[in-house]
Image (cartoon, rainbow, N blue to C red; front, side):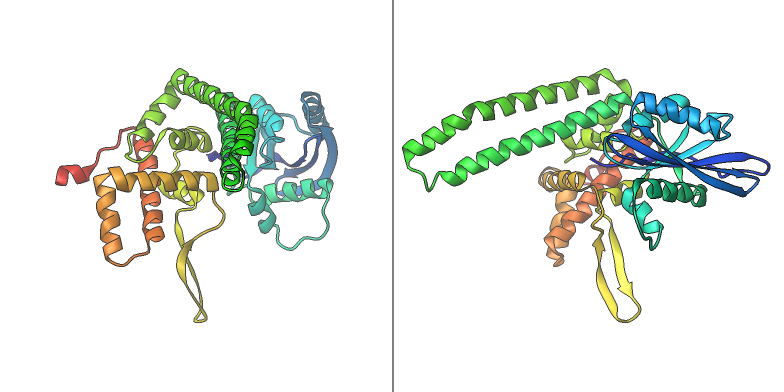
Length: 353
């Protein structure tokens, strides 16, 4: 899945204040931390240390930061890269201690550093520390870790992996069928029968757990119902969007969400030599993009407005995939609109007819 969206603005230090910027490079067994004190706009020396990526290691980090001059934990501003799973203990620690934490996109941070030479965990933490100081005015704090969304995200990831194994096995057996004799094919199908049934049963249990989480949480259920009110948006897509946006913890705009999903075309030109067509960027949440593609196909089949739009654009000679991408964009804009306005979707097109 996707990194989560950001909510709270971080302000750089004011006059006569002391701020501590921390860069942390996270791996599975440990994390390297670099801390820099900035007092009245004067940068201090970088201090580095390594800690176990455990609860005990985080307590040791807390003591180390105080030894470095931190009087209050709200003086800290920590930047880490999104590692998927390994950064979760730090995220939880910062949420509990009310420490400002920015979980950044690894590619974005890497490109922003410019040309660099050499790489190890200690150097990476130092670079993240400097990145935190230089970009503090623009960086925003990630919302606090919510165990409900972590569980929901893990369940969705597990479902995707199990479904992939199920479809892969089914495809394998189907490919064998033309070349095998009937007796051999029966043996192969019987050999895989228990595995397929087990996978199917496991997927069913995971879907039950997902349903329980949605029903049990009033805020999740409310946004889930709002998203589902949009023609073409199904159960899995609604749950996935809720996971990606941390249930819209910040008021995410439609443009932000569409860009994240990779359905916004950007200009591609330079001077007089490069005159490319507008195109979507390769950096996107591809799983969400796939789900939106299926939603778009469903929308042009069951939504009168979307079907009319698709037919009209095709009649104008537009490429079919280009039109489908426009529909994906429209759907994601509708999602942001219904959630931010807290009102179900109502089709004005139907009233106009």
